[in-house]
Length: 273
Ligand SMILES: [Mn+2]
Image (cartoon, rainbow, N blue to C red; front, side):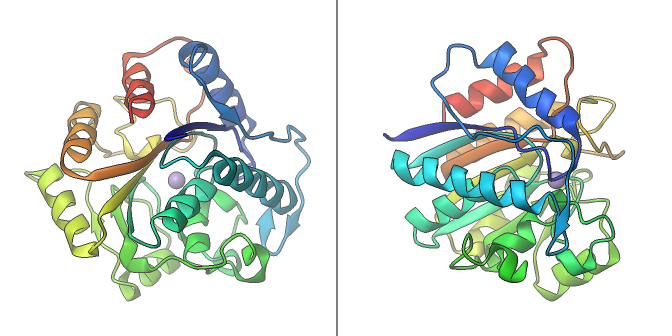
């Protein structure tokens, strides 16, 4: 199989069951006829913290299950529908594995998602997936991340609600953060940052909260002053034309109650990957 569509409703990262309902709504409204694999996800609302991660047990099992599906598929490209922001950790690690580290990740998000478990006040895992991919979640995920990724593989776009420890870590690791607004040629700036990573293949992780909430309110943790919705599809299209795009996923969707043009376009983009 060349391409896998993977539905991972993992919601425990934000301990917000609305995100589970959001993923189900996407399946209902947009993915009825699409071939897709589904990660089995627990709906038990009672979550306990282990290793500084709330819902650790479920998250670990679901991530292992997702890895199994990915490896079994042999896919060269992956479209992941989440779920909380940690729902494509397995997809990114899989892409990094099959392309032997020749992978850049563009992380579109209002947040850093780069907390270490011991630095997190909430213990919510949706604030930690990038740190986990970098091998920074210790023994808790050591068997899931046998080969940590390098900070140099990541480019952030739109982060505007960072915790102090996250800002410090990103500065120290020299991880570029491109603002969601005020950049004259945003696709150009991103392509330049991706060029500097020295990697040929690209994975795009889209937390929908990177968007301006006035344009797109259907996310779990909206933050003002985001990327205008009108800029999103032109950016994605430019990336698809000018890079070797091998992975895409979107996350943190909560039910809108009806179809929207924006989601229709995003699902189409993922299915056409
Ligand atoms: Mn996020």
